[in-house]
Image (cartoon, rainbow, N blue to C red; front, side, top):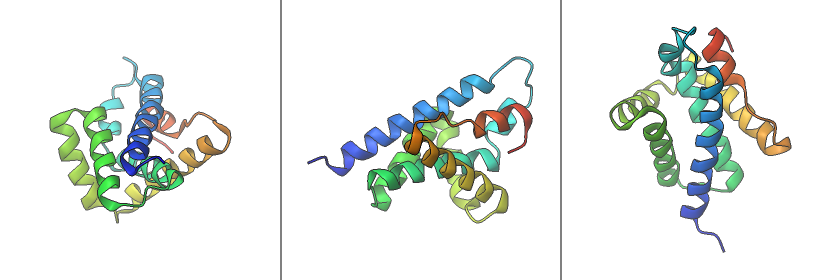
Length: 132
């Protein structure tokens, strides 16, 4: 039987792969707003929503495990200094509208991926154009 740590580790790897694919698609020298958009409320909400939906699908319901997964993803995506700060900021902004919109979209992309293995693309589109 698979334990919670194995499940959350697999979820972290999946989340990071899906997010990095989108970052690679959106990153370009001709997109000067990329860095600012990546750390704004909508994008951080997207990361939360994607991770939460993947955790839910894996049956991980422990709050501590969920927080550890979110920390791992933030630290890997944003680096040790920025990742911790952005995670704290995300926890404070959970009730804000823009964060919520990103969160809903991230969860929808994760569920679509789990349903038919379609590649999530909303974050990449947002980072390129600034719209969801």
